[in-house]
Image: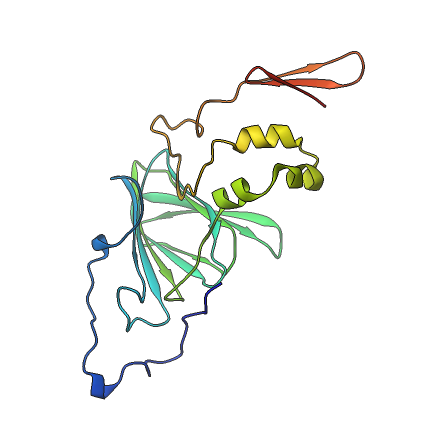
Length: 215
């Protein structure tokens, strides 16, 4: 985990060094692109070294897509809707409640540091400005958590059959960021066909894509 970039003042800017670079075109730094209508641009202290303590993401989404669930371990986030309508969903770890805010142009939603959240456009297109209080903020994507956790851990933790969860999560090959990754807006990869059958011996037979699993 990187060091927080927050500082309470601008002491990094010295008179003797002259005026630092104060301009950057965010469109020149793509954070992630799914397609032209689902893209995020990023500006941090890497692009503007004088911008210590803050960062910016310019996010575009279209209906049927989502900024996948994720969290920021070292920064809070302020989401400002520029155009369209987006539902910003946040899980409060203190109360274990899900909060959903439908925000339109000019409205803002604040996401505390390390809170799980995602953004879903409900209009045909949505444009958001995201502000962070760390010039090198970090992001932990939900897709990475799912694909990198061994299936046996899900079984041990939640009683989910390891083979079933491995099959369900197998299409996730990398960070999704803006989903879904496939063009037809269905599930990642091929749809999973699952048939459940109770047997006389008390066991349950589940068939996933013609593969039988006994429970």
